[in-house]
Image (cartoon, rainbow, N blue to C red; front, side, top):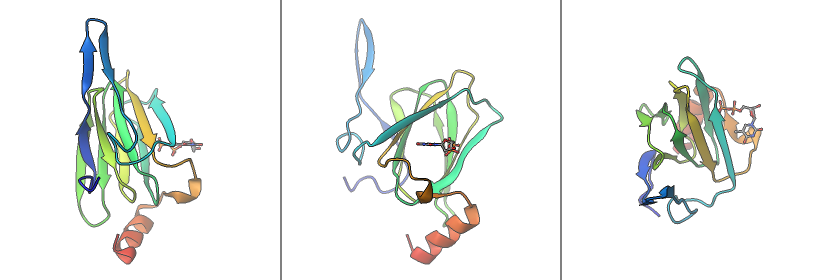
Length: 140
Ligand code: TYD
């Protein structure tokens, strides 16, 4: 799955009929990792900023399955992008070692986070300067 080189928006097919719509996401089929963990964020609002960390190991897929939010992504080498999450069949793929901030949550926002790893607080980098040093030292 070498086409997944950086943070990018993915669009998933919607199966629909008169009963409603269905989106299917399979590990190593629709996203470039096997799924070990899901969690979801709701009850945040437009003034909250979440995330503000990078992960040494975890890859993520973020989808607003309801409502909207924004995700700002930085690679620590001077590149950044802002993604708007506003449709239940689109999501952002984030490889490891990306700084991420989620913000501007709508009142009805439910942000689904799908991860390649079990939770391990030791693989979270929560200091931006440390993240930048690691990226530039390691040449990641
Ligand atoms: P945190 O990483 O700060 O959330 P966010 O990135 O959305 O701002 O996590 C909030 C709390 O939940 C923190 O105490 C760690 C805990 N947590 C787990 O125990 N397991 C998990 O998988 C996640 C994502 C968080």
